[in-house]
Image (cartoon, rainbow, N blue to C red; front, side, top):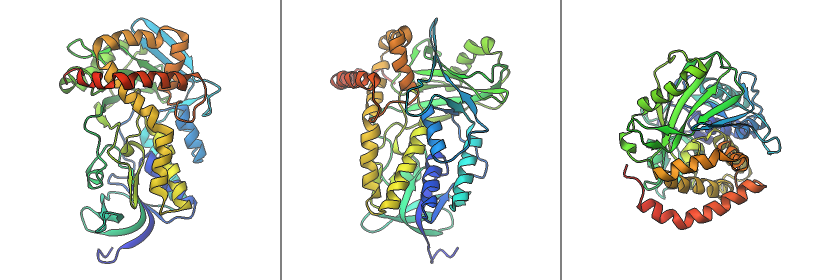
Length: 413
């Protein structure tokens, strides 16, 4: 393409993960000219736990994505020390009563193919940066390597964890807010067809300290399980945390029960941003992980990515000029309160003695375990009826009062 003659698009999407693909699918089906720019190659794998909440399954169905290749999940098994609770996803939630496990290589492939079928253009091995006008508005994107340019009415930042494109837009993570780190691999197991996700809430680091996170076993139904572990940055000794050791220690806990074979690939780690300085501006908006839309209490964000991509695309089709600000308003009303509670909660459980006693409470009674299930399943937001959001509202008011003290007394990283 002649770098002096920019191509024209209605929407330019940076990133071909679930959030970017959802925006592209929805916009292209509505008649918009969409190009998705992905710096990876076709078939690229995204490091992830591969778990799909009922909320994510509902979003995929709304996009018309058949889940034939996914393994159905009916609930969550929570473990805290010697206490176990095996719970089904609540049948009365508005998203449906089942989730799934679907390795990201396959999930993302289906989403990208749906975007292409809708008429979107996918450009692989193409890293682009936002192009800014003199007034700071985003007017398109430019190839970071050969200078090719595309003008667009809207640029969608769907790059996952903050990177170069986010820095250009001032959309990095908020430094004083928590973030997560996680690591995963795959292993063969005869229990690969189990219908429950398993989360071990009582993890210890190499030095014996409690880890504010969890280890997971996500059965994929294909002979393997996704095994992983993650932690929040609020834990004592976080900078010294050895993720490979954390995963290996967790594997030792579950290897016999799950009859695990050796890792099928080298464990890979990734960062989980849980905040953003800004998620929109003139001519652009961020979706999914790039917008900080990750539940701090479970590290999950695929469902939020799919939903935010669809919301932004729908608003763009209605009015391109007002879409970024209207999107930010809707996202704020739907997600910000719950995610703020989660970030405050992460500072609370960063204190080891609070974490140790809180874990017993989380699964100690059926009523509290039911609320924990909804939190871990991303089933609560600003639109959710019932007891759980009311309880979390009370909790958030208490955490708001305690938050300054919790931050000042946070464990040294």
